[in-house]
Every structure is written in structure tokens, then in C-alpha cells.
Length: 191
Image 1 (cartoon, rainbow, N blue to C red):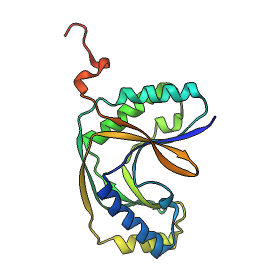
Image 2: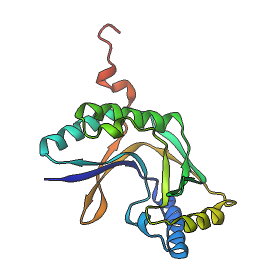
Image 3: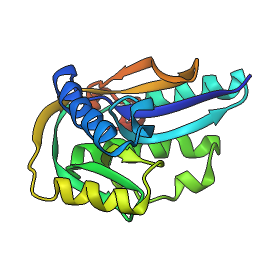
């Protein structure tokens, strides 16, 4: 048994449609297609390889402890890049998304799934093009979008787990938020 999972935020369908329009434009104009193999998403943790049923069960149990959060407003805005390998939409680093990612990471650390990932700096973003971009093409993409504006806002009320099946990332499990005051880990015996 070997499964690959991705923990992410998926924007509402109307925003995904807008993002996919941009991704398809980039793919057609610049002949870079790698990002189209993935859903439009904001990675919170992953992809992570799980090789046993026991580990998979512990993985999902751990994630169920990271759902105690209030919904928050997420803003996607304008364009940016990592060096010369990833072109993306900025994702506002608000307290909601930063705390959610921290909760997920904290819940998964005891499983020792990927020690490198446990120490990485989280920079939320929504990838538009990566992997198959050559430096001259990358510069052309940057120049094409440098003066363009984009802004979408939506409410986040949970996170998703996608599973790699049949050579594609597919929705697998949803984790809707629960009231933080109901978190058993925060209960005070004397409160």
C-alpha cells in the first residue's frame, strides 16, 4: 500500500474558474502545462506519502484534531514568484490561514511523516505555473503579468485532503471547521 495525500484549501468554484482561466491562458501562451495537472489550491501540507493502513488512520485522526477554528476571510491578490521556478497568486498571510497551517503541522509532527516538511517556512500561495518553466519563458510570464491586478475574497470554513489516484489529484476527504471552544485539548479541568 502506498498513497499520496495533499492537505489544502480549495477556493469556491467561481474563484477556481477564474484561476483556471489564468492557468489555461499561461499554458496556451507559454506552453507550460505542469500546473494544469493539479487542482487550483493552496497547499497547507503535502504531498505526503503514506505506506501503511495504520499510518493512514493515524494521519486522518491527527487531522481531525486540527479542525477547531473559526471561519476566516481569505484574500487572493495579484501575482508573484519564487525565484525562477514558480509563478503564483499571492495569498494573504492572515492569522486564520497561518494558525490553520500551524495546527495541521503540530498535529502531524508526532507521526514523523516528513521531518523536512516539519521545519519549512510556510508561504501561502496558489501556483499558476511551475516545474516546466524555462528561464526565458519565466521572464516572459513575469513581464506579461507585472501590471495586471487580481483580487478575490472568500470565506474559509474547513480544509480538504486530496489523494493521488489514477495519475490525478482527486478530492478525498473534507474537514469542516468546528467551534474552537469545543476543542477537548483546550478544556480546563478547573475552569
